[in-house]
Length: 280
Image (cartoon, rainbow, N blue to C red):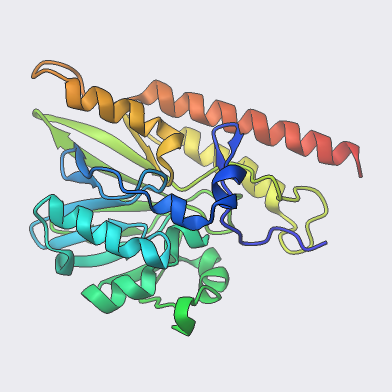
């Protein structure tokens, strides 16, 4: 049995997206209105995929190119917000699965952005070659590395398990004179096909998950975002954002939601680990 294959199979909360995958990955590209989340952080992804633009005076940072054929949707969203896609200077990713970083080469071609990848995900990323184009990697990142542009600093946190180099990004954003800690979660979910015990391709996967949860719980968090909108209940929060009055709180400021997501995913992980250990 092949273990820990890099497949676009994702856990959304406690639910599998097998019905969506059965329709083909095109369903992941269903457009969603782009919007300002907080400060200089903007959502530019699709209804299923979390991509974020960090705007700065010296150009912009894009997190997650998604599928190769999602890139035109991301470009359209960026331009609807009034930014130039060509001003993308840096391209980051959440983890080496095709639904998050397959489009890196296309973004690189269109913008010249510097592509940065966490060290532990480099082997998997290097095998991701849509159209037989080599996957660009301009900078190899390590846990705790900072990415700086135009006065904004993002910190790369290695939160392994979902992939060996799964990366959670943190930054500070300003709104109404206050500073908020933004967390863009890579993923800490356990996919249905994952082997946590006796995994020859990823022997330390269970230990890595434990490490990932520990790191995620140690981060300062106010605003919770993620590689999939369902992680942080994007649709519901976006609806609240549209109806919010001038004095209403930003619905994306949700530290309780972040903790609840980690609690749910860790419960799922522990249950699957115990189940697999029992069948050894």
